[in-house]
Image (cartoon, one colour):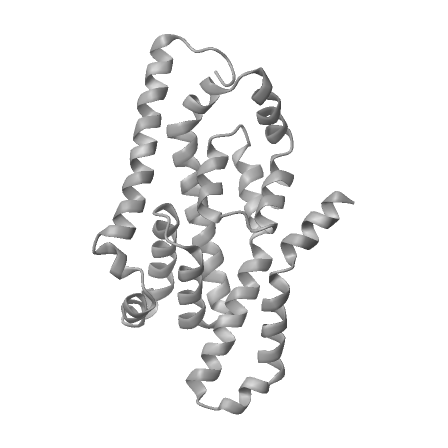
Length: 230
C-alpha cells in the first residue's frame, strides 16, 4: 500500500484518518495552550500533586510525562519537574521512561492515522527518501535525536514514514540518553543544593561538574554534525 496509487475507497479512508490526525494535533495544542489544563502542567501544580501521591508518585509522573508528550507539552518543562522532585538519578530514570512511552504512543498515532495519507502523496522523487529512511531507520532517528530535533514533532513525523518501529524505538532510546541525563543531573543537583540551604555547595565538584555537562550539551549537535560530515 505504501508508495503506490491507492483505490478511491482506500484514499478516502486515508483522508478520513488524516483528518482525525490533524484534528488531534490541533486539539492537543489548543487544550494545553488555551484551556485550564494549561495550569496543570506547571512546576507548582505538578510538584504539589506528585508530593502528595506518596509511593505512587513515580508512576503518576511517568503517566503525566507520557500524556504530556502526546499533547505537545514542552519536554523541558516536564523534565525539569521530574529532576527537581526526584533528584538527578531517579529523575533521569523516570524522565527517560516517560519520554520513551510518550514517544512510542505518538509514533503509533502518526503511523495509524497519518501514514496511509502520507504514502498516497509520495511520488517517485520522494519515494527514494522514504525508502532510505526505512533502510537506515535506526541511524536516522539516532542522528536526529542527538542533534536535538524537536522531540514531539519528530515522534509523530516518524510515524508518517516507513521507518520500522524497533529502529525508531532503539534510536530514540539511545539518542535521548545523553541529553536527558545531562539536563536532569544539572537541575536535580541544583535543587538538592537549594533544598539543603548550604550555598557553599554551589562551588562543590558535583555542581561544577553538572554545570560543565550542561554547557557541553549545547555543543553536542555541532559535534554530531561535524562527525557525520567526516
